[in-house]
Image (tube, rainbow, N blue to C red):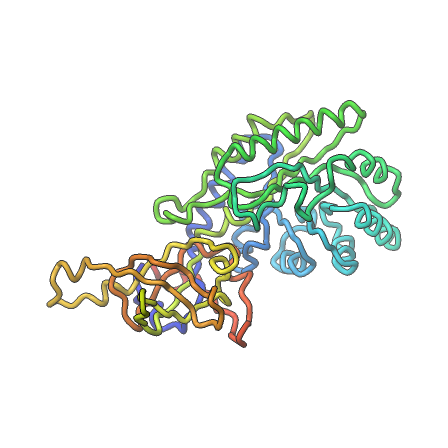
Length: 396
C-alpha cells in the first residue's frame, strides 16, 4: 500500500477498500444463486458505515439488526423494511414499535415475555407482527468463548424444551404470525463441521415439529462464518462456496421453506484497515515498544478478545536510505505494538516482527472492517476515528 495520499491525513483513521467489498458481495451472490430460496441479511452490527451500507444495499442483500438505531440507519440508507430482521435478547418498546411502524420482515423473538409484549404493542397499532423464534440449539462452536451464542449456558434464545409450547402460544395470539425458527451458534467459525452440527440439530427439531403437525416457512441459520486474519492478502474473500454448500448438503428443507443467513464479519472485515502513526519507539527492560496513536478506543478486539490482527509497516520503504546495506534493508525487529490509552490491555500485538520502525511511520492494522469502527468509543475523551474510502484517495 502506498502512503502517497494518506500521509497527510490525521491519524488514526479507518480506510476501506470498497472494490474488495464489491468482490466479496459478488462472491456471496454467485454462491447463493446456486440454491433456491437462499436469502442473506447483512449483520449491520459488524459495520454501520453508510458508504459501505449503500454498496451492500446495491448488491441486493437484506439487513439483520439488533437495535432500533441499526434499524434507523438501515432505513435511512434505503434498505426495504421487508428485508429487515430484528434480533436481540433485550428489545425495548420503542424499538419494537419502530419495527411495527415500518412493517419489517420479521422479529426474531428470544423469550415468552418478549412475544407477549410484541403482541400487545401490535394490537395497539392494529397490526400483525411476523415472528421467528430464536432457539438455543445447545450446539458449541470452535471459536472464542465470548462469541459463542448457541450453548444452553448462553443468554441467547429459547430452550428447545420450551419450543412447542411457545409455538402453540404464538398461534393463539391475534397480533403475531409465527413464521419460523432462528439460530446462531457463534462468530468467527472456520470449521464447517460446526455448521454441519447445527444443520443436524435443525433436522432433528424439524422432525420433532413434523410429528406435532407443526410446519414452518423460514429457517434462519444466523451467520458465524470467519475470515483469515493471519493472511488477509492471500485470502481476502472468505470461503463462501463451502459455507453455503454445507447447508445445502446437510440441511433437510421441507417444500417451500426459505433459508436465511446473517453474515457480518465475512462481508466487511477484510475491506477495512486501521491506519495509525508511530509516536515513539520505547525500549523497556525486556522488550521494545512501538507506541502508536490508535488505541482500544479505535479497535477494541485485541483488548476484549485477545484477537489477532496482522500489522504492517507501510512506511518501511521510505525509511531505506541509499547508503543502507542489504542487511539493513531486510532487517526486522521485535516489538509490542501498544496504544496510548491508560489501560494495560491497550496492546494490539506482542512480540511481532516488523521492519525497523521509527517515529512517524504509518502502521496498517489489517482485517479491521468488522467490529472496529462500530465498536469505537470516546474513552479518555478521544474523538471517534474518521473514515475514508481507498478509491477516493486514488490508491492502487
